[in-house]
Image (tube, rainbow, N blue to C red; front, top):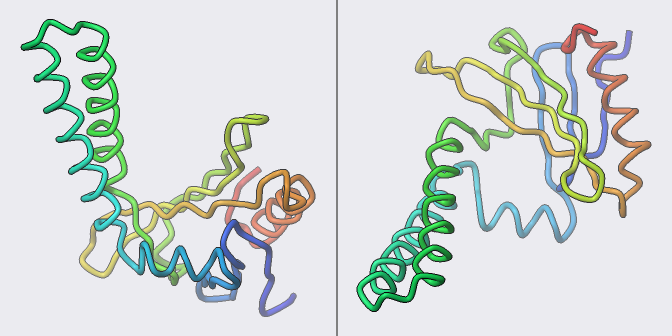
Length: 163
């Protein structure tokens, strides 16, 4: 059995070791992701939250002026952003996940032309909280189908996915 198996992700590589999963970033896409997110997702969620507040403010202003189209448009966008901020607050951007802390790994296939495939890894943090880490796989323009099959086979062979 190999001590390390590797597959491509959206922004770099995922290394499956015997005791942990390590996500590394490389190239321009990885560097930009490192600058914007770092190891925490909260900065991104805060930006979306502020944007949602502005959308709701504009929806209120449109409501006062009886501009119903803009009320619905800005209000819908604001509510959608708040919903996603709340939903995403349980995600983690940690680059290292200890395998003995992993509770579950799910594979989510791509929806053609809409989304890309990804793994959702539920794990226990040091403080005992259960967090989720998304491992986004390459898209169609980056040989995504072949890379997804390779990644899925590695995760199954390592016993992380039970199917």
